[in-house]
Image (cartoon, rainbow, N blue to C red):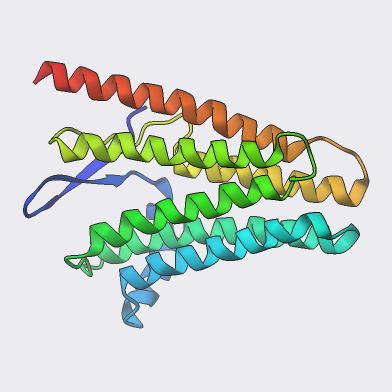
Length: 227
């Protein structure tokens, strides 16, 4: 499914905006409205998303040296920080568009922090299982593929074509999968039942990101040949 909408920005062929059902929820609208009234700028929210990604990364990296309840707590903190990062990604766009606070540097702040946040979270997730075979390699591979899928999308825009947010493993899908894997790891710690959840989650992200990159590349080539 193509989940893309566009807004017009002077000097740019198309400034894409990911379609999210959560933008239409009452709680999101009220939260964005309250932040707008408080004078919170979209760029500040975008920067906050990196702060939450950093918090998740720190928690992940501390996991191998922890055990028992503290290990489970660190994993829950990481999962919560991932979701807060996504909340920032939702709200910065709502402040910029729905509340008319978009500035000249908005597109830069909208995209660059996302790339940094993806790398911080996915690489650190790999380091959370660095004692397992291929643990760190899986984290790095997931991060590289996340960057590549975003690169293909932005490349399309740079040559005047449509920027597609199609999956199956776009940003929100990556973070959802990783959140589930992180919570499952926490459950593993508390129950003593090993599910190998983090390696499985990262492997799913890698496979899905590869499929996403292929789909976006094919769409890009098709549009380039058709124009």
